[in-house]
Length: 334
Image 1 (cartoon, rainbow, N blue to C red):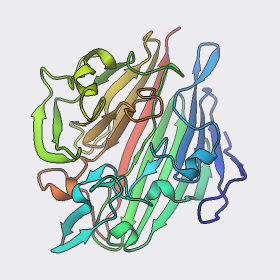
Image 2: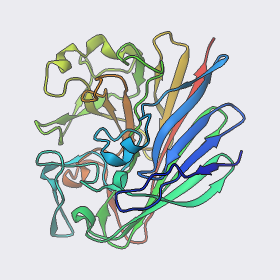
Image 3: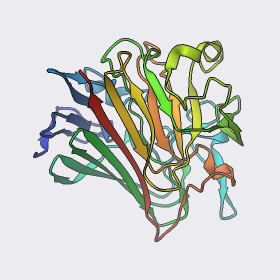
Image 4: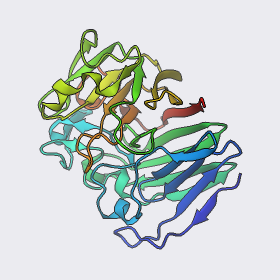
């Protein structure tokens, strides 16, 4: 179906006029994307004889441009996750990035991709491609990066593909930061989660991976069998994290694979997640204004990979193309 393009009467902080893209298909999916941050503002799913928005968002679109500290629905980058002390060395040059999360660099800095107005590159049948350019030195990163994101609906699935090129060696790690609530309201602690992750990355006090990878066996992080999210969260709620904010390791090897699923408390609505990325960041919305009302399943490279040689490389070099794929598929049993 054709993409509907509207102008919601909003501007970016730089005065650029924003656009809202509405994608629909014959299966009943409806996706709304705001050009600012290439942001998913709603994702409506058919459930029996009704429909349900299953992602968190602002009722007033101004919320996305004014702050959005939780990155609701944003495309985040250049590098998603934390880079410890905002510093890395690449090709014998040390770079100091803008730190925006204590002494760490988070989700691309103070003006990462989530704070930029992406332009429309193309539209297709229930699909849209948005693009953004980040200049050399942006937030401290080397190289001019040209990035794109493709959103496409097919049947009861949404496919998201990020791509990027650079004219200098630079780290890259792009992901969408949607918060899911398959019930449409309430908290997500009674949602049922399964992840094909045998191991997790240990985090330091700044929530940056240390480089050590450990088994999830006999820990609250073991979701290899379906488990209610809140069943083992109590020890984590008493910590500084206030819940799950953890990096679980996948075995995708660069090929698309089903890495997990999320079900509503009744087990009727199910979302299956596929990706070609080596990790998923599980975040239970611990610092939302209403904590635990959404859960993020951020399929990406391991955070802080630029500082940990044993992690899969996040370096994008001239002549290469970075590609990261994720697919969310939905089913409903009445």
